[in-house]
Amino acid sequence: MSAVLASRDHRFSLGLALAALIPRLYVALAWAREPVWDGHYYHFGATRIAAGLGYSEDVLVGGHLTWSPWCHYPVGYSGLLGLFYKLLGSGLWVGPVLNACVGALTVWIVHRLARMYLSHWRARIAGLLCAFHPGLMLYTAVLMSEPLAAASVALAGYFAARYRAHWAGIVLSGVVLGLSVLVRPTGLFVVPLLAFLFGGPTWRELLFRGVPKAAMAGVVTLLVVSPWTLRNCRVMDGCALVSTNGGWNLAIGVISETGRFDTLRGSDGCPVVTGQVQQDRCWAEVGKRRILERPGRWLSLIPLKLRHTYNHESFAAGYLGEANPEAWPEPRRAWWRQRMTISHHLLMLGTTLAAFGLVTPFTRRDRRFWIQAAGVASVLLFACLALQTAEPQLFYLIALAPLLVLMCLPGAPEQNHVGRFLFGLVFMTTLTHAVFFGDDRYHLTISPMLCILAAAALRVSKPNLAADGDLLRNTGGTP
Image (cartoon, rainbow, N blue to C red):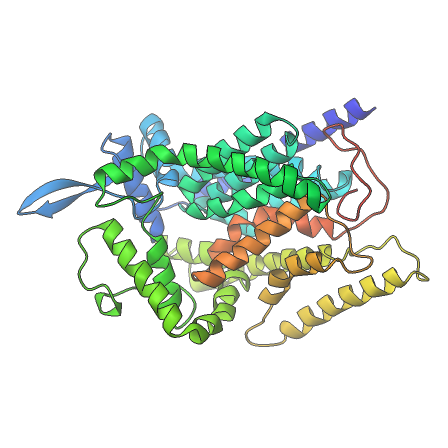
């Protein structure tokens, strides 16, 4: 019977991925236009790679064009685009169609990962939420790295969870995470979270089994990244692990008055620079110096940064409006912004409720029922009140969700290894953008994981058989 259930589950994963591919292909082929904003640079870098010129540009020196290496932007997304540009040409449809395939793969991963955390039907709900998430579908036409970063982190987590008892889990998760770091260097912050997937339910198992395995996966990750690092040391004006925008982003997060991206100028602290690495180091020093000079001001910007990161979802509509203004007038962009934001708000709410469990298995005579019910009611009341204000502070919901899990309130669901990993991703994303700066596109890297956590809010008490043939523990975060 378990083999039959597993076979049906795998067929559902594949069917759902194919169903998710159809609308994404339509968006890719019908709505994609000339890349704008950061997408322009990813596309340009990919065309250079496809032409055999490496990650570079031509600069005018003494009246002559001279080849000059790049590493300001991470190379991973342009490298993958360059491979497909080499095979299929650099038509405007290639990148978005690749995004559509990455999005369908993400849906498959979400359902498979959810089956290690949730019951049969809740895992399907998680997969459906990811498959038809408005923001993730619209982002298919956007030539940006967030979908690939989300897919690679999810895949690394899946390999670590699926093969947690074998060396394959360490190697596969490390390799995929190394590729993810080449797409977005913040993927390095995921390495410590692998300890949750490799460890057990107790702190002892986490420390003595999870942490060593995560460290070994981290070594594999760095080995994957190291050829690119050596390339940077060889051709740039100094060594850079992946890219030279870390110090740049830190300085923006300190100097910005809004908590969002702001253009840096020489007058902000680096008037003379001689190369990309030297420039990044200069901005890193500027950022650290200003934090130490005025730590209170830097801390006061954190709510603004998190508000821009979590409070709404609009980047894809703005990008497409910039790329094709006639087809995307303000009313159409507003329509999409509203739908994307509503769906994102629901995922945030579900993620917070997952820390309590929306459907309780306790009777009303059990004090755990009343503690849990009070927590759920508080979350819902806060959300209702926040939505009545001009600038809703809904970001507090998702920012505090991992802390609610750590509190281990009576009646709250006990998270298994996958649940701890997912909440860890939420916490790490919040911490990253509290330090640097915020923008709504950054939460899209964890939106697929939020689909799983939102489905986890629908808690049941009866255990179920996992798709991979393992009977999961009967905890609140499991079936």
